[in-house]
Image (cartoon, rainbow, N blue to C red):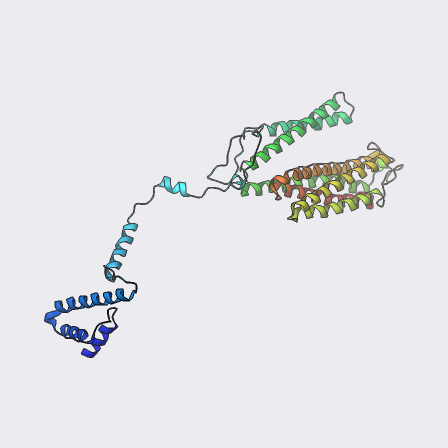
Length: 381
C-alpha cells in the first residue's frame, strides 16, 4: 500500500522529490492524526519543485485558485442570472424586426445634377414597412388617360364620317393620350428608383403586362374572325365571293414573306437580349431588334403604297387595312417600348420588369403576325 502511494506521489506535477521525502510523506498520509503536517509537507515539496523548474528555465503553471466544482457552480450561477434578465420592450423588438427590403438599399450612389420631380402626388411617398405592397396615392393620370382615349375614339369616328371638327378632336385625344402615357411611365420609373417597387410589386406589374396582352389578343381575335367569317360565308353585298369582284388579293410570296422573315429574326434577337449577360451583347441585340422592327414598318409602308385598293373598297379593303394596320401600330409601340428599355439599360445593367415586359410584348406581336400572315395572305380570307 505504501509503495503504491509512493508511486502516485512521484507521478504528480511536483514529482521531482527525493526518495526519503516521498517515504516521509507516505508515512504522514498513513496517519490520520497528522494530516495537517502532511499537507504542509506536500506544500513544501511543491515549492521545491517550482524552484527546480525555475532553475532550469521551464515555464511555470499556476494551480487554479478555485476547484473544478467551484468553477462549475459559478458558471451555473451566471447562466441563471442571464435567464432572469428582463425581456426587451415591445418597441425594442419592433425596431429589431426585419423591414421589407426595398430597391433603394441596392441602388448604388449616383451623382445627380438635379432632383427629379414626379408629376403626381406620389412624390415623397415611400414604401410602408408593414407590408410589401405599393399603396398608390391620388393621381390625375387615369382620368387624363381616359379622357384622351375617349377623345381619340370620338375624333376617329367623326374623321371617318367627314364630320367637321373630327380631325381636331382626334389629334387632341392622341396628344393627350401620348402625354399621359409618357408622364405616367416616367413616374413609374422614378418610383422604382425610390425603392417603391418590391418583389411583390414587380410580380404584380408583370401580371399587368399579361392582362394587357390578353386584352390585345382578344382584339386581334375579333379582327381575324371577321376576315374568316367574310371569307368562308360571303353574302350578296360582296357578290357572293371573296375577295369581292374587282379586288385582287395580296399574295403571300411577295413583301409579306419578307416581313415574316424579318419578324422571325427579331424574335430571336429579342431572346438574345433577354438571356445575354454581357451588356454589349444586350445592347447589340436590342439595337438589332429595333432595326428589324423599323425594316418591317418600312416594308409595310411600301406594300400599302403599291396596293390597287384602299380601305374604302368593300369589306376586303376594310378588314385588310384594319387588321394589318393595327398590327403595324403594335409593332411601332413595341419598338418604342424596347427603345426606352435600351436607353435605360446602361443605368441598371440588368433586365428589369420594363425590359422583360417589353420583350414579352414583342413576342406577342410576332406570334400575332403568324396568324395574320396565315389567314389574310396565305388563305386569302
